[in-house]
Length: 380
Image (tube, rainbow, N blue to C red):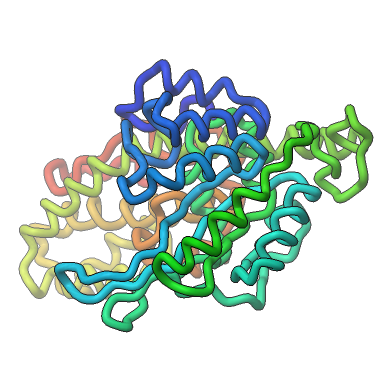
């Protein structure tokens, strides 16, 4: 999306190139150029990242898929061999995003007929989120599972996969079908099955860039994007909500990482008794407000000389992280919140109006310095 989440070291020219894409066809062309080495960086990867050497023989197949409307997001060749830590077996596989039903049907028909293992997850608006299909084991080391593919991608992971895209294109690409195709056998034998099949998928016919279905499922004409004003307004509201959340999330990043580092330094100075008290207060405060922290400090056994410092550090910190999780889950766009919240279930249950507040997260100028200044501030 425009500026909120971008890769810091990606060149400005590359950022502008990806932001300028408005259609799946344009995105596919850029992905193909990145695979072929004529575009330096791509969203979702560190700057100047390149496909691994083992992937280079597959670039023509992957680039052709991207240009035909099948946006590849991950892949590996089949490998069998010894590594430094054991015997490795890899199935060849590829992950793709498809937004056109006709393209999806063609892909699934070809690879299913060829005996491939296929997982399809429908991320369109209104589609059921649950799926009975289990992921497929793709890599093992000494017989132990090392990686699986074909699991349903969570909504909270989408912004990490496609940062920097125009909001309209992000809306389209994240609400298509996510497909995983896995060779049934490992090593070169699997390579010989999967990649020739995928070479057959791109069709020489030209495909329409416009979607064939509205977001509500209604069939559309060749030049239509929405079936009527209601769906068009809903789409605009959804994009606006994403933009508001991502702008707020950028403010959160400006605040959170220095704050977490300061908090770690503060916690390192606590003794075992105080750390135990911190854990107890965290558990007890999940449904409490920050202003109750000071009244509970003596019962927790915190030394009086540390009490104000402790309350300033722990109370606002946990409350702000809970607010972040609430707004992120409410938006379906939580990023980097896993493992930070004291209780994700509570954060989800308490999801409320934070997303639509003007400034739901602390601004950088209100940053808290944990453990140095004992005056509580910005503890909303």
